[in-house]
Length: 102
Image (cartoon, rainbow, N blue to C red; front, top):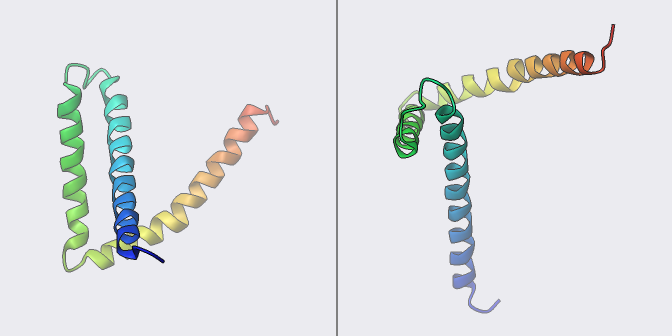
């Protein structure tokens, strides 16, 4: 393939920009929901976004410590098993409520 290093650079740049775009959309979605609540109504949107980014940085930094893999493994276990089971049960209740099952 001609100019393969340029294509590799473009792939890496694309993946990086997709990650930045995903992070931006998640932070802005949460900041908008918080801005609509009574507690954070007077806060500027940029300050809420900064607070959310710093909170995300602090939580993510825990995974970079020596016990980060153990923390990741335990969170993966509980989210992958018990939270998905709880979500499935709540979906069953939601469908039963929506269709008026007696």
